[in-house]
Image (tube, rainbow, N blue to C red):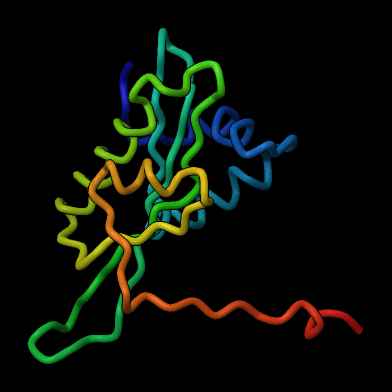
Length: 142
């Protein structure tokens, strides 16, 4: 298995993992988000079998720090036939290495219930100060 940063040559594989049937608009989106969204892929025998994204966002400057950045892990996917083989763990390790290289203040992840234990095993903790607001569904109906 090889885990590496993805590039333009990986657009079709990344789109397929996201169930996107037309990779054209996805390629355009990737091209305009290269500074904020860093994709990683996992390959087995030359085929992309998994991916994960690191969103990099800038925080408001603070005392003594004019630039402050954090990361958010997004869209971690491993093809079903390749799950439970350490591929997800390798993708997270690559993302966290990138986060250290970029000196990100912290990295968050918004996990589905089934994946919470996976993230805990990979060093994430529940944080009592992280709060979530979600809009009421009725606000979007007319």
